[in-house]
Image (cartoon, rainbow, N blue to C red; front, side, top):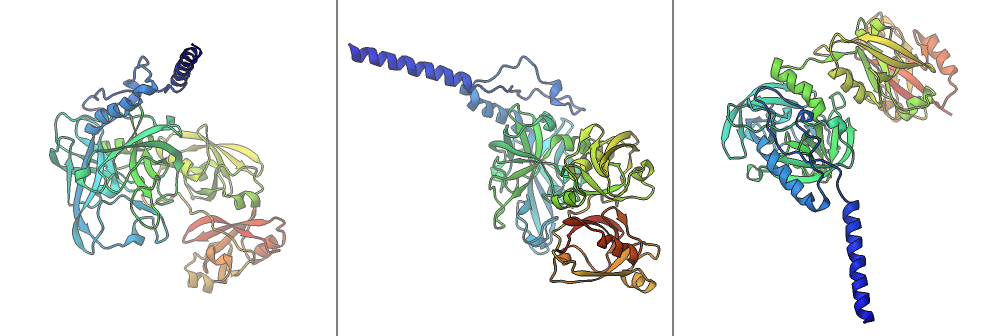
Length: 500
């Protein structure tokens, strides 16, 4: 009798534990299946999501992914691009050198001056036939073919490309297309479930569905620090051929365009570190390309860089957040508003700035001609300036490369800018400062300075001649000095460690 009572008591306890675990593990997310998009407009998902959508329990978690695949797969396409491929070698992919681990997603190995096919993916964004993909999938393509879920095949034409974001829009003439629902990538949280869909390695593997989580947001300087980058990082399995494919959230909304992967030892395959362009960054690009065939960006008129630890110490800053102004372009919007070299931009249009990439993306997506309030840290004081944004010139490169490690010795010589030196280094005779004439290749300064560089500022002191330079060096009382360098008509800040 005691044994029976014990068995019954044990069963009751296990049942109670099961109920508690099931209740505690319910997923507080809504699942929205494909609901269709009108023919001529790209509609945000917020207009299609009902607040009455039921919350799935942990038991239905498996069905959630099945429903996502069923809803989104018809919007994903396979793209094959025929073109002449030059043997550029691994080290010459755009934005990469031989030591980089990051490859863009090419579906084949480039051969020397051979006609080849590039494999990629794309996402249908409206039922008129517009498809969003990566620029590197279709650039310089002679023929572009698009295959749908039902194996139907169409020839596509390029509507517009934007290499600075690696995005492109192509178009096919087809009926009964099922576009993706666009989500809000800004609302995406680290740790959320995401699903990647594309065609890895081969057309035979089209519409491969993989799942993972959002590993990080706002990744920049992954491919090229002069590009507009704010990648979503994910561990969902993506591989060569997935480029241009869909990254969707648990509600089936498109929140990113898969673009690049990190590899180890040059092997172009998934290692759990992939990158996608946020859909909110892509929306304006996509709209501009569809409406105008090109992208028009707003322009602040400054060259900026991140505030690293050495810059923060040399400027005695309490925070490493913000974007340091290395140059104010003459007659540009920032110059007209009174912005100065050495200002640290900490807020743009009410949004706090973490780094230069974030500021660059915010400015580029802002409305041209609109006045924006910008908060800068000047000295120890915050100052608000109002800047009327202009249009980014075609040849303008806003970003300046990050400073490299400085040395424990000076390791370089400077001189007055004479007519002879100006001619030797191709300098404008009106330039003020001192010119670097020698750099010790064995010193750490060789990683930063080059002969012909012009030093125009040390700390907060402007350098007009050799006397100014010697006085500024003599007065340094910190661990590092901040130096403004002019090179090839572009200026940037670098930090040098003060000799002990």
